[in-house]
Length: 218
Image (cartoon, rainbow, N blue to C red; front, side, top):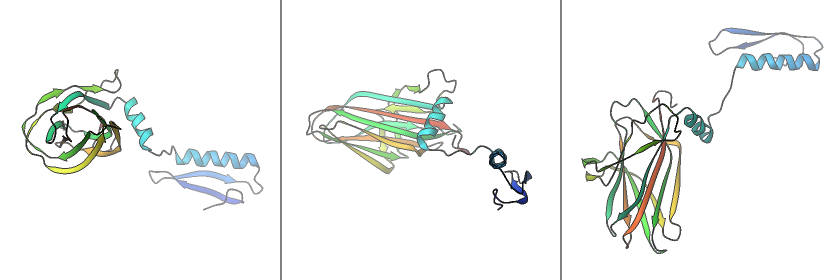
């Protein structure tokens, strides 16, 4: 690679399509203006570089109208048993990949109360339960969600266990950031169950995600 501070015949940079982009000749005694001009040529030849940090990508997807929310508020769960609580479905034929931004879970109970939210993939469903509204994260966005969300489903087999969140009454809520790296693929369903320790208390749940092209992730 040529040193732009030293004399050289030319500097060659290859563009992404493989064609040669000749930046130009560097003077035998380059000045600061020559160096700056060459740096600009190099920058122009390289094009726009970007790094997809999760928080920046989430803002981008939200601004593009691809982000959605679902909330389940104040549902009483019986104690000392694992209750099938929430279903999140990415229907077959959706042509979308769901990228999870975050889950929020919480309880309204005494300090000693403990609840476990368990997550499963691929449950066997007898009945979906009660439909939950899916909201646009950006109200003005044109894209509608393809997701189907339900609460209090009837399940005959829970599927594959994939994660757990523990919540205590003394710290009654928790947010789990998916960093857009937890996925629900086309045709997949996520089941969320709740196991409350001793007291019948109210439980809340929310999910926020983006629905993107499965081939590009955006």
